[in-house]
Amino acid sequence: MAVTTTPLLGLDTLARLPERSRPLVRPGDVPAGIVHLGLGAFFRAHQAVYTEEAIAAAGGDWGIVGVAPRSAQIIADLAAQDRLFSVTTMSGATAGTRVVGALAGVRHAAADPGAVVALLADPAVRVVTLTVTEKGYRLDPSTGRLTVDGDLRADLTTARAPVTIPGLLLRGLLARFRADGGPLAVLSCDNLPSNGRRVRSLVEQARALVPGDTTAFGEWLGASVTFPGSMVDRIVPASTPATLDLAAAALGARDLAAVHGEPYRQWVIEDRFPGGRPAWDVAGAVLTDDAGPWERLKLRTLNGVHSAIAYLGAVAGRETIAAALEIPGMRAAMTRFVAEDVAGSMQPPPGVSVIGYGASVLDRFADPAIAHRTLQVAMDGTQKLPQRVLHTIADRRAAGASPRWGALVVAAWMRYAQGVADDGRALPLDDPLADRIHERLATAGATPACVVEALLGLDTVFPPELAADNTVRELVVEWLTALEKHGVEATLAGAA
Ligand code: CS2
Image (tube, rainbow, N blue to C red; front, side):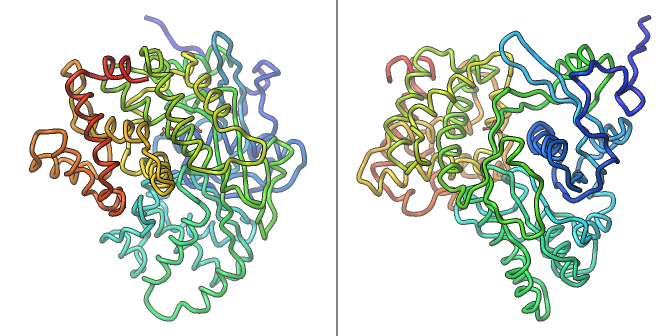
């Protein structure tokens, strides 16, 4: 029987790691200045890496306390490894692995929400960052209105420990206000539209539900707390056993929290940090007055195309984004989506060509080493479609154009949401609105027109003007008819 002799990654094993794989800072050496909510793979391969590099290059007490809202496993794994984890950067046949030491602490919010609220009130903490996925904010995807259910209401109106992200954030801010904890920046690193403004509005909407007079708290929020917008970018798929094997081979130590991602990375951040910030610029981030153009460029081009390939690819039975991109006609259709719909829908950042950016995105998606699953990107479609595709469609309609390719993406999502691939296999619908989608489909007729009618009626996703737009509706029905009748491959072969 094989016995595992490879040691677990930890402070004890650091000296044995290849030099190029060692962390730039040791966890514990740098006091905490940041609380991060959401310990997923993307955070570990993006903000943690930038922050560690910034601390190593320019100093500052900017260690990160990582908070996992739900998963106890990641906390246990990181704690067992002295909060160290590795990032493997891969491209084609090459890979390099480096251990990151940016985590000053870890907390499990579900087990100890009080500790997280106290941290948010701690004057040493001057920045809060979030990667809690689109749905974690509990905002209507189309309108940005806070969805208030029993859990969130109890978080905001009772003294019980908060269980939702908006509840945790609001209770932490309230505790900070009461403790005179000083200025703070709350930085969303999720792919929400105008993420800074959305989170500010989330906090304002939540404050309005807190009983009693919250005027002074509201004034303090306005004066002491900022919500900078940001654009974040790096392709980081969910880790698999292969990710852990790669890390173990490179490190000579097992890493249960290993992640892998592409070499490309980008972070554009609005520079409004009243309590200071790490020197992220030294690590390559762009600090700016307005991240809006960058954010729109990325959401509409990269994420819009990503979602399109995910739905079409999943329905065509392709496991990964790279494999889906190889379907004949896919690249041409995506290139036309960018050139004919996305490019005309917005003003890109100065000097940037949307078409050139789109081409570079397709090259990034084509790398088979990344193995990003279509089903992962296809998740939570109702939370993603507005900022990725519907804003493009609405802006093109306002300009009098017929956004044919944008309509293909909506039709592809509808085809996917019906749950059966072209080869008859079942497709999972992992989406917070899955029940509503199933109900609507169950009572709708079977024709493409009926399906489109039923799903356009999801009013927290499709704004009423868009749902009532006959040009859009006809285009979506046309594409859905083709997809159902001929399948993805024949539809793409005949389309672009
Ligand atoms: C992807 C993103 O899962 C998804 O929906 O589109 O996570 C994408 O990989 C990142 O935004 C890239 O920066």
